[in-house]
Image (cartoon, rainbow, N blue to C red; front, side, top):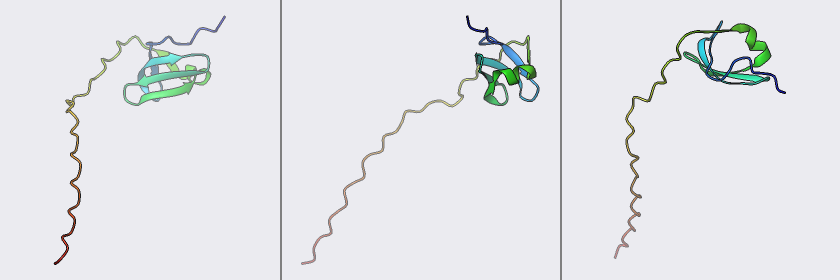
Length: 88
């Protein structure tokens, strides 16, 4: 039987240095947390567990890209070079 992860996926945690985050994955060796202000961080589980505490906050809503996606413009091939006309 495996050891149960310290924090389940989706758990809200608070780290002393990085602030609030959401657990993306956790096993005996590593834990990956997506922090609100620092992005994703991967830690060695036994070391970081002492710096984490559970949070009762509601996870933030994922922001979608505000830029509208424009269709890619395919560049026309460059015209072939014009051969120099030989002087007569």
